[in-house]
Image (cartoon, helix red, strand yellow):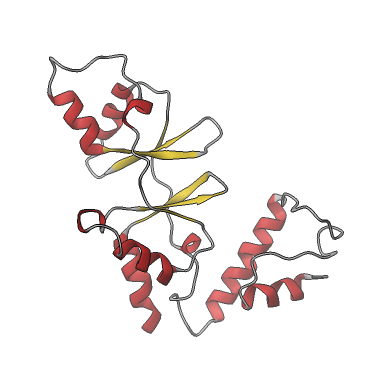
Length: 189
């Protein structure tokens, strides 16, 4: 692509990778985008979505994900307990490393259950000892309808668990099944 108009056209047809002199000379390696370049892509994508007649069914999940509480894997579990104790709406904490790489989740129930039995717990336990890694993770570029299908194909007791958006191991955000349904329902409005 040579200019913003070509970039916009690529976004409209769903291309996820491109090269050209708009930002850099062609290169055999993928180059890291600058913040201004990422902002340009986001702006053009939002512009496209606003004029799109198919309101959200084929949009990507990065548009509906939200960032929730995260905690470092080497934090003491009592810190997680205090975060959860102070906010009953938190169903899990996202566990990350110091570089914000997604490692898994810390379910509320696991932490609360551990601290229920005072004779059994140890104050020096860390978050990393309680990480759940078998959660549904998706790329920010995945389509909403595809992620909804993935979510609904999980085991019955996991169908309504949150979905976590991860981009090259970095934690981006989460999506609730409710938000997926709302996005799909908005398709017809």
